[in-house]
Length: 121
Image (cartoon, rainbow, N blue to C red; front, side, top):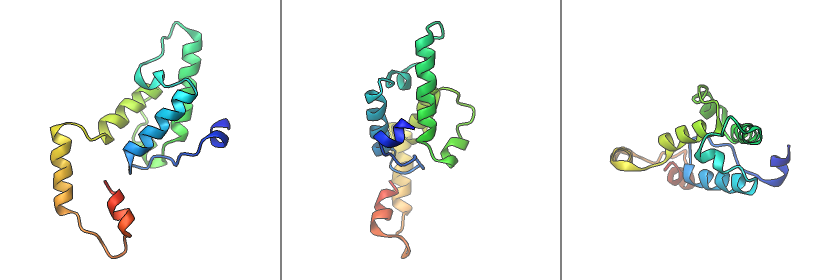
């Protein structure tokens, strides 16, 4: 597949969403598919439907199986992207409170490297 030869992005596994998000947006922009992350395709325009399916297929290859299994009901790139943003992007008061709680109780285990420990957020 052309994507694998042109770009290398590890499948998203739930960690470092902001970095993964930025890389995926760049890939979709380079392939002129970025608008399908922001809106649904117009079903009356065949080329848009075709490009939307391509965006969907590419996005599926960029997701880890455990993340993908939680998104089984989402059938377009836009719906998957929207679900990922709402789940993993830290915005709003609720996410700030949850992040503060996680930071308050986090402890580094001896088996975990410092890099892994820091990357948990």
